[in-house]
Amino acid sequence: MRVLVVEDARSLADVLAEGLGDQGMAVDVAYDGLEAAAKLDLNAYDVVVLDRDLPGIHGDTLCRMITERDDRVMVLMLTAAGSPGDRVIGLTLGADDYLAKPFHFPELVLRIRALARRQPAARPRTLRAADVTLDPLRRVATRDGRHLELSVKEFALLEALLRAAPGFLSAEDLLEQVWDEHANPLTNTVTVTVGRLRRKLGDPPLITTTPGVGYRIAAPELPS
View 1 (tube, rainbow, N blue to C red):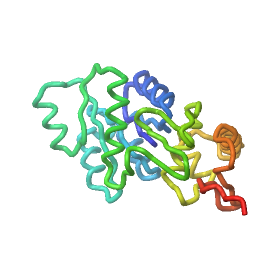
View 2 (cartoon, helix red, strand yellow):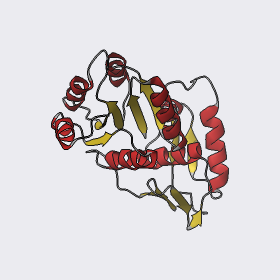
View 3 (tube, one colour):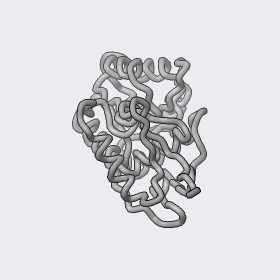
């Protein structure tokens, strides 16, 4: 899942980005409305965490801009104004959810995941391919009933491959979906993480690689 945090309080924005990253999300940050608009034109996001009171382009205006786009992104609006009237205004602007500051971080995580599931093109809550099952909300993955002990990035990588199955994802696709805009495309991060995930998935091999195309989850071949 890729998330854009739009918050002009840099310390809060950076803390949110780090915390959401620890939850397996790929997180980009914008510190004002103009920077956010530019990033929305460049990248595809599942959820935008949007502070309402922004410099550059006000959060209200940016929210309207997002809701008018063809590639609809879910918006969770943050604001220090938490009265019922303020919440109504935020939702009227097109926000999909509204959270008043201060808030509890676990609640923010749950709301972001809930919004991602509500996207028009969202998949079912539980992802399955071959004999692998993954529940993004509960953070549980199994293969043939065996619990998989995965790191945050390994879990996110498996989730991305399952969402794309039976299609391929290139290394660039995986960098965009699992890491963030600061990931170096010249590193072997994807190759190394895929290797670790393959070992934890065990035999028969489940992740296939096609040179020049990418990676995908494929049903293991049966012995002839």
